[in-house]
Amino acid sequence: MTLSDSLHRNKTLKKGEFFIKEGAPCKHIGQVISGVLRGFVFDSNGDEITTHFYQEGDVIIGTYLPNVSVSMNIEALEECIISIANYNDVMSHVNRDKDITEVVNRVFQKYTTHQQERLVSLLNLNSVSKYEMFLNNYPSLINRIPHYYIANYLGITPTQLSRARKAFINKCK
Image 1: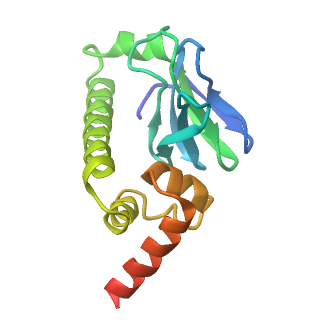
Image 2: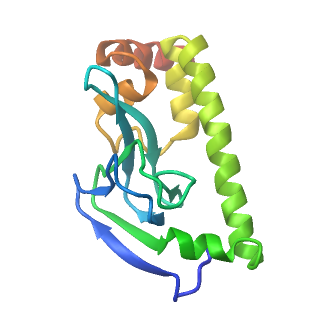
């Protein structure tokens, strides 16, 4: 994101710290400079459901509506450096600053496409195909995050993930 220095600052999150927590108002937008974060929600049983992973270059936002309470949590899975800006300030530059408008449009398009692909995969794909899609979307994360988060993201058990990984490796031989 090419924001002027007056709009953003760098912030460091330690592993386990949150960029945003459920129920908090969406006041900031960020871009990951280094590190990995996980977006998650709680289901009706209180279990965590991983919905997103954010890595270098990704834009992080709790909701597309500023100052609205978010329904998800975004947690650092390793130490992260994030370029952070006030969401209202950024949005006030949309349609006035070509670069910011372009970035915001790309982010919205990317996340919309990602959410559609994720929904289709959860409903229609087997565990091997889900794993393959994960590798295509997040090629650098397989050795950076715990596999139980990957399994949770894919909507499968860690045992199913282990089997899917083995089947995928055999398929590639």
